[in-house]
Image 1 (cartoon, one colour):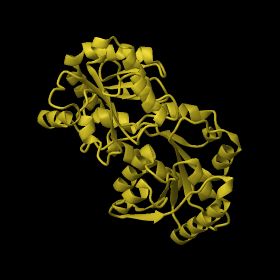
Image 2 (cartoon, one colour):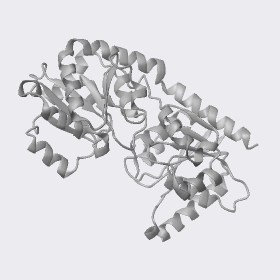
Image 3 (cartoon, helix red, strand yellow):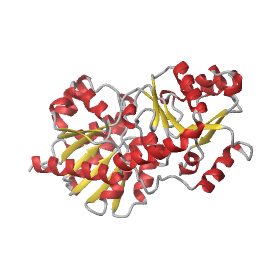
Image 4 (cartoon, rainbow, N blue to C red):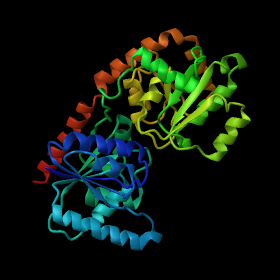
Length: 376
């Protein structure tokens, strides 16, 4: 097959970028794969480094005020679609989906279009109806929660599969004790052996819920609070969040690793991970990466996050936006320090059973074959 992946993010891209790169990397040797992404984006840079993959600089401007830019983007995308005659276009957001449909208008041959729903935002309104009715042949939901949410939308009448995100279990694997201790000393120094280090590589956007954990930490009695540190990877947080951390007198216990090209040393240092999202989330690559590296994970009960966890075995589930319940969970972690390694081993075993990249890629490829066959 000749496949085009599109995504509109013009910067880091988060899980969307991880998703597209994983598929392009795996399928570049089986099919003729192109990736169209904005210039300067992490996705385009990543695609340029993949063997057997053609990376195409393609903006996906959005908004009425960017009409001229949208016309130019439409013309360049239309030329690509006309020249390459793709069998299938896999779109990953409303902005790129919309531009693909506009660019295809009037072309004599239309590729099959697969749409992946990557977030929990409602798929409603005239735009969603138009994209579903006029320009989608198959839908992929990245977890069961997303699939259920889509059933009552315009996409619910289309062929749909739930294909949970997968991670590279060889890349994301538990580190040996000596390497893990060395990574831990990088953040806590030589005297941090007694500190419970909780962390997240899910980012520092507010809806990821990391401030709920900070607020929960402030609720603990002083003795327990002093035994916990927090480590976060992602872009620098908003000024109001930093001010709140200082107001809670937790500046010395909350550390920011920044945007990391390789999150493994940071994750290796943790005793446990957390993803406490309360909006936009689906199933979380970050959660699955931490579990694959042998870390039990504390998640909120939002969207598909609980689908990752066997509570009490490889992690914990708490209500979203509930610092008091998160505080209770932290106390449980402090009391269960000796059990955390065994829970981490259970998390790794869970990842090996259910999170493998091969399962994810093969299931997605099967969707492609069915979509193309249905249009033959």
